[in-house]
Length: 257
Ligand SMILES: NC(=O)c1ccc[n+]([C@@H]2O[C@H](COP(=O)([O-])OP(=O)(O)OC[C@H]3O[C@@H](n4cnc5c(N)ncnc54)[C@H](OP(=O)(O)O)[C@@H]3O)[C@@H](O)[C@H]2O)c1
Image (cartoon, rainbow, N blue to C red; front, side, top):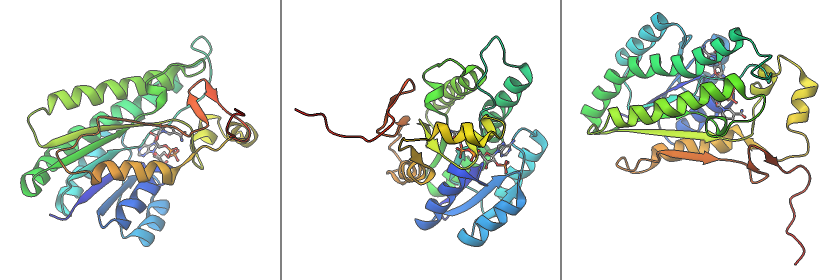
């Protein structure tokens, strides 16, 4: 089988950039998200096979996995669909927001992984190996005030990734995790801040964040490693961000000696 990878959340940001990067390196790609017109534009550009699917709907996820199997199978899966809602404190945030974050970042990841595992095993049988990579976040490694539901969801996704690696022990399927820090994508912070463009601009003001293409290059690089090499956990931050609490704004300059 050709190298064929399924990327969820492919209609924007890191997911779309990853499909472009995989395609550049000769992978067949399957782009999955809810917005059909965005997927079609990506397909015209990259040749991706597209599947409209809400990863929080188990019926749609089962259909998506069946379509992947029927159209050429898969040797790779990127669980990238996800996002944050709000920056409210634990005290002031709402269970509705938390539920939505948990559904897409954790339950969606679980459903897609469970539905895709038989397809990936088939891919591993014919090609020798298969790969799964989960997009978590530095918010899944360090808590911060206002992180609440997003921290909880990404910590959970981080834990699930480790569980999966243990459970797939003995199979030729590597399980990887990529945890980015500040990435300037078109929609992530805008959605988190409920459409407040000014507040969104402040997040990226006077700082050099990662671009979606930076994350995609590293993400696809992990798939391009020899198949017995498993980059368990890749933490990727902009140089200007030395922790979730330390973001340098202004020019980066060597200290005077
Ligand atoms: N940007 C950052 O600073 C940052 C940092 C660390 C980690 N991350 C993580 O990286 C991933 C991608 O982030 P991004 O910045 O590229 O965000 P983004 O531009 O908002 O992209 C999110 C993608 O997920 C898809 N999606 C959301 N809900 C979905 C659902 N229920 N079913 C299917 N697809 C769904 C969206 O497409 P549709 O709306 O068309 O479905 C979109 O393509 C996320 O998991 C995010 O948590 C982002």
